[in-house]
Length: 121
Image (cartoon, rainbow, N blue to C red):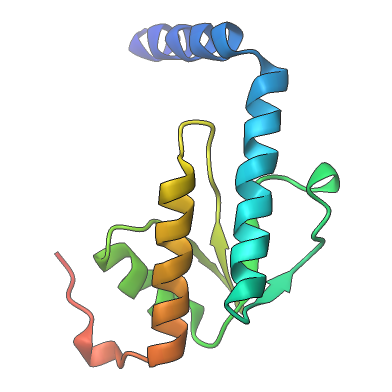
């Protein structure tokens, strides 16, 4: 029963903001990820046309699971998917959070932090 109330509240937020505004904001965040990756020399996996993609944006990396673990330890929640690391912003994310995620990804990819340095909680 509680799930019904949670879903109802979520639908209320979506209806209040409006799907078109949400989509527009997600395109802005997606574009920021793509441009941030390009500026940092990361290789995009998939299209760079934000009108033809979901907000999820993936970059080709070595050892995606290691990178995911380090990013999570730094407060960023990506998903390792095979040879890519995926960032999936939502309508409540900010530009600053996107920039922070891209900074962390770039720093980790560039530094090659060894697995032994990863701390889990």
